[in-house]
Length: 207
Image (tube, rainbow, N blue to C red; front, side, top):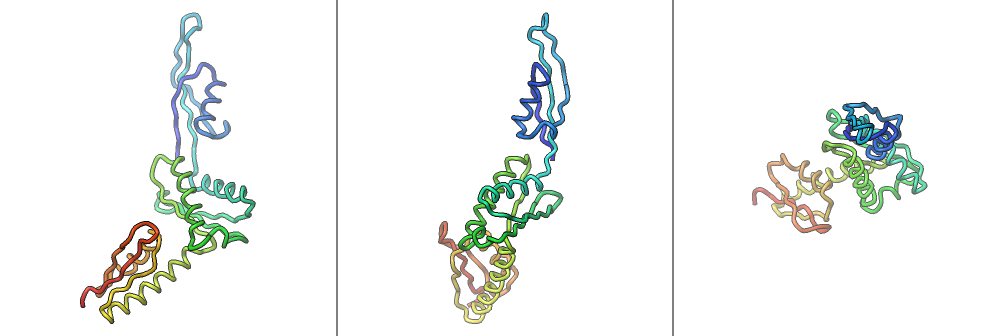
């Protein structure tokens, strides 16, 4: 991804200082070109139009952000990432000796870290990038648990004809349930409630 700005400056040094500040990057990563020179009278009022170009590797910048974030918390981590869908999605996986602390109760701390990461990358990118973060395989394990729960509950609902309400879940976990049961012929799903109390109800199609 390329970030570009155009501006006027009186000297190259002024242009370099401005570019570093606006692009929030060291000078060695920035390419500065002269676009147009404006000559003043007797040197008064002269200025130059510059362009400054910064090549940004979003996935790598996100990795550095996570390592700095956890480093400030004095937690050593190993961070890996995969770029998906032609750069439109980035998945990060973090491993540490303190996975439980990074995950938190019901994954709430993990979700907070993911929100911070998404916000950071969102400020760097001019286009929407889907960013996901997992710690110690928690989300993958949780997904399998939810799919087993969805299947088991759906079978009971289909057999008894009695709807079942699951425990409140966040939007990510509700989406897993909805997706898992979307093609079932005998049951369907609905979300009810507000905020932290929003939960899925699995209902029979035929009573």
